[in-house]
Image 1 (cartoon, one colour):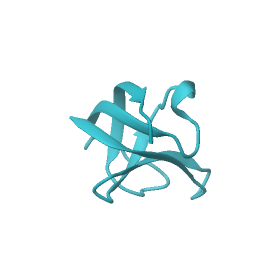
Image 2: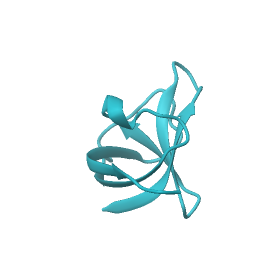
Image 3: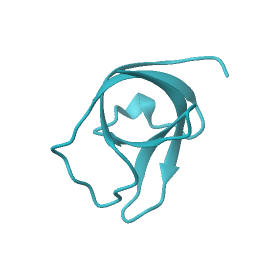
Image 4: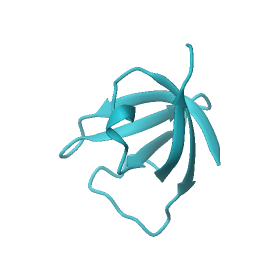
Length: 73
C-alpha cells in the first residue's frame, strides 16, 4: 500500500515514529530507517500493515516500511 503523510515523533511510552496520513489516520512505523526519522518531513511510503505485531505505544496500525521518498510540502 502507498500512503502520503507527515512523519512525527510520538512521545508515548519509550517513544516511536509515526506517519500521520493526509487522511488523518496515524500509523506506527515498524523499524523505520534512520533516514526516515525526521520530524515534520512529508513522505510517500510504500509498506505493509502488520496485524501480527503489537507495540508499546499502540497509536494505530503498524506499518512496515518497504520504501519511501521525501516529497515537497
